[in-house]
Length: 55
Image (tube, rainbow, N blue to C red; front, top):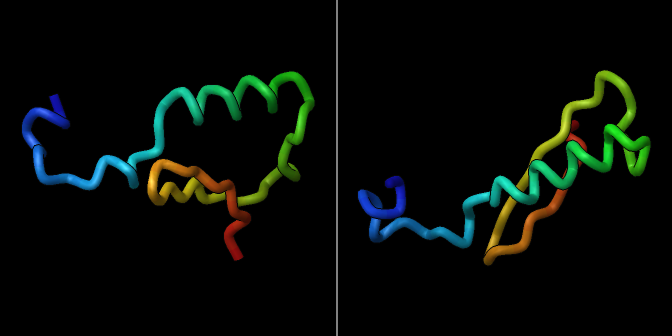
């Protein structure tokens, strides 16, 4: 419904839920798990999502 009610939104900046779910799955399997207590940002531009450690 969000896309329906926001036809002019830049969907290329929306982080896909599949991207977030994939990260969580990898982390539960000890793959590329971030350091405990770290703060991370998911930044999506032009449909490409980057995982960046917040400073």
